Image 1 (cartoon, rainbow, N blue to C red):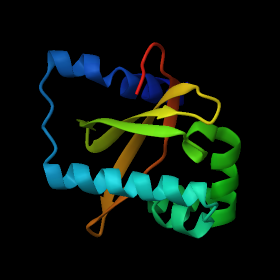
Image 2 (cartoon, rainbow, N blue to C red):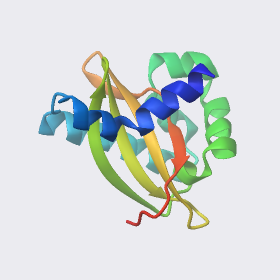
Image 3 (tube, rainbow, N blue to C red):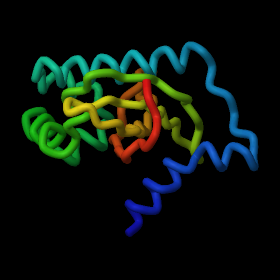
Length: 141
């Protein structure tokens, strides 16, 4: 239940921005975050488990234990992110003390989803701290 609440709060983030001003991320942070996500998706496309795993946060790496388990979980549960046809990066917003990058994804079967990537900066390097995906109705790239 708490996972659903977190997911809904991330998905509804643009509505919250209407009521209170969130700090704007700088251009360098946004470029680095996009680069990390693109690199991880490229690693998924090549089935390069080690490269994809290296771009995940220490917490995600600890939760999965090893690169092959991580890749298998993404392949089984996140097909649109694992084999996307197309990506469109939307806003990077700060939610509490974490940056979240929204990405509109066209999956391998033409389905549209919004992928929400919580991001963390560890030792000066941005890392993905999970991914949540929700259907994206009526949006195109």
